[in-house]
Length: 159
Picture (tube, rainbow, N blue to C red):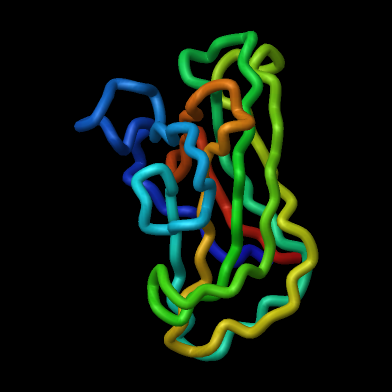
């Protein structure tokens, strides 16, 4: 079941006002996903209009590259799936994973599917199903992510 397309502005660089990098820059950070409202975390949320039963193998499909497309770079993308009572607070982790990739294997953005494991939960009506991504210090570089465009679609899957 496709839970949601990960929305975007339809442009490769949604933070163009901050930098000219060809994607959204996620700086390496020691805190990972601890604070969802932090600047180094990208969050997508879907509010449940009625109780949402989440039961199956969860994954996030997204595009990422190490900053500068450095072929010596090792990218690490940390992804979490949570049920939150309010938009970014009182959250329960449903699944989480780190995905490592070698930039030398990709000329630009790597198409990644991050396995979040088997999930069995109910997101109560009014609560939020939240996906968050960050770059942990294990990554050799900051990461650029791309999503929400015709060339770089992103999706949350629960099968």
